[in-house]
Structures are given as structure tokens and as C-alpha cells.
Image 1 (cartoon, helix red, strand yellow):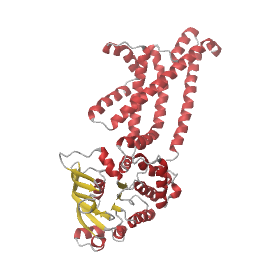
Image 2: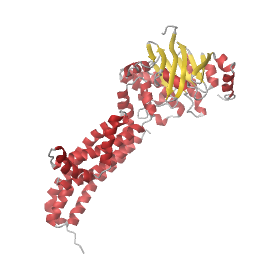
Image 3: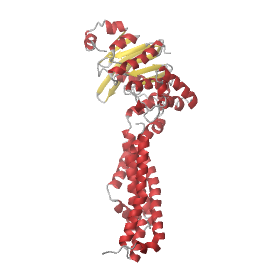
Image 4: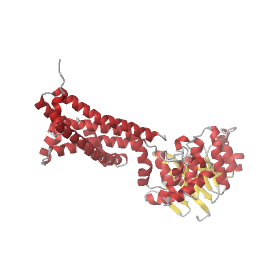
Length: 220
Length: 256
């Protein structure tokens, strides 16, 4: 019978906290960068000539249709060889996670924008509004309402996906877990603790998402 | 005003969607204060023609003059700039079959969006204007409601008020009662009737023949992409002469 001993982790708590902070840091920064990429790419894809939409489509499909783990390893090991620029593990992780998030957010933005009834554009035009203003004031607010559930979903995935940065030795929560395991010989306690920490961070996020959705749907 | 005293003159309007030539040289001229209804079978091009009047559809050939705005269309001619279109549309209100209210804004904000964002009125001025117009369409108590809480008839009255908030010279109505339950048609027609009585220049596409006969200064019968016949309600609806017009109207006997 295995005897659980969580007290054995006590000396490692500072490392665990540090890992958690790194995880949150990568989530926040790559979600932010991914949103910017996604918004720009998503908008461009809805109303651009083919020579713009085709490469964007290519970018999106490459990142959606290959595993993030492969992308991460490829950007860290292969890309520097290809373009002759050395990238720190941190930079490679930031770039890959941002592009990965961006490809999914772009599709969410595009879907949201296209889900808004064409009649809304016409109503805006009929009162003399210009294109940009119709987009900002009429279409985008409605698109964002449609997008919120998928957006939250993707962001939750993004936080969990940051765990992959541990493969290039970036010190996130999972990486610290493996380091602690190697010295404490307590893998069950370590990974249980880490699982609980991921859950404790993400679960409240889903509750907030529910609230936002309720509020936004109030006047539908 | 255009040369012949009309406030709106569209001539020889052509419009095709792909291979489908919908308008084949349709023309119409409307004097200030006139109410012109367009009737015709579905596919005759009447909605497309109406949408050409505020350039939601861009004609491929023809001329359009509304107030001081003039446009000529043809191969080799540049399409009007976005700014010119926006200018025109400030003076031409439009009411859609499916209302197209802004669902994320309150009723009052729907009305003030144009005046504030396009004309640069202050929110306070626009609110006062908006409340006046809501009172006029009988919806003063709905200012803070969201469109989803309104009946179809109420939505369409809000849509009319929204168009009026821009103080347009001409109002266009694209089948304003076609999406409504029968018992809600009357309240919308009453609002339009009031506007006609006030002397608003209007062009309507409608299937409500009795209403068209009643409210129109003139009626245009569209057939196969052209304005086949134009005349008074008596000439077109009550005592039609041509066979094709009789055939079209016979389908509405007892209706409307």
C-alpha cells in the first residue's frame, strides 16, 4: 500500500510557485499576442483579395493541423538552422504559442464576424455610416458576443498547452514538477499537486465565462 | 432639385447579378411630397430597383439624381467613393423587410446611432430627437427596451423612426410589412400613412394592394426589369387596362 506524503514537497513549494507563475506568464502573454494576430488575420480573411487570404489560410491550417509539440520542437531546433538566427527557448516558446493561439483565434474571429447578419451592414450603410465605423460599432460588438464561448474555450486550452514548453526546458509548472520528481522521488504527490493547481487556476475561469455569457445574452 | 422638378430621378437603371439581368433600363421620377408605390411579381426587380435608389446595389448603367447628389453609371466609369455614398444615404432613409435593428443597442440607441456617429449631434440632442420620434411612432415607453423584447410591428416602427432620425429627404420602404404577422401589419401601415399625410417623399415596394391604392400619389408596375406602367392608383390598381397588369392584380383579389 502506497503511503502518500505531501509533506515531503514542503521544501519545493517555492519552485512550484515559480513554475505556476511562468505558466501564467506564458498564458497571458501568448493569449494577448494571439488575440492581436487572430483579430488582424481574422478580419483580413473576411474581406481581402485571394493573394492575401491564401497565405493566411496556409498559416492557419499549418498551425491547426500539426501538433503544438511538433511546432515547438521545430521552431526551437529547425527554424534557427533554416534562417540562421538563434532563438532562446523562451523566445521560441513565446513565438510558437502565440502563432498557435493566433491561428485558432483567427478562425473564431472570422466565424464571429461572418455570423453577423448581412442586414446589419446594410442598416449601417443605410444611415450613412462608413465601412470602418459599421465594423467597429455594429458588427464587431455582435461578433464578440457570438465568439465568447469559443474564445474562453481556446484560452483554457492555451493555458494547458503551455505545459509543452517544458520539453525545451522552460521552467513552467510541469517542468518544475519533473525537476522536483527527480530529486524528491515523489512523482505521485508532485503530479497530483500540479494537476490540482492547473484545475484551481482554470475552474474559476470557466465560472467567469458562464457569467459573461449570461450577461451578454441577456438582451437577446 | 433636379432639372424637371423631381426630387428623385432614376433613369435607365441596369443591374445584373452574374448572368441574371434583373433591371433592364428601369426609370422613375418622384416629385417632392409624392408617395410612389412599386408593385409587380416577385422577380420583376422592384426590390433591386429600390435598393439602387440609395445605392445599396450599384447599377451597372444608368443615372441617379437625388437632391443635389448625382451619379452616372456605365462601363469605364469609376464607382462612387465610399464618402459620396455615405453622403447620399444620409439623405435617403431606408426601411427593410427584416427590420435590421441593431440588437446590441437599446431602442433609443438604435435611433441615435446615426445622428451621433454620422451627423455629429451630441448624445443629449440625439436623445431628445429620438424620444420625439419614438412618441411619433407610438413607442415612447420602449426607449430603453432592447429590440428582442419587441413584436415585429414594434420593431418595424422603431426601424422607421431610426430612418427618420437622419431627417432624410426621401424614405424608401422595402416590403415593410412582408415579414409581419397579419394582425401587426395595420400598425406599421398607420405610421407610413401618417408620414404620407405629413408630406414625406416616399417610395414603397409592397404587396398590400389596398394600402397602395389608398396612400399612393402614383403607382409603378414593374415587369421583367423595367417600369412597365406608371400612373395614378386609379389607373394602375383600380382600373387596370393592360392584360399583364390585370393578370398580376387578379392574384390579389380579396387580399390586402
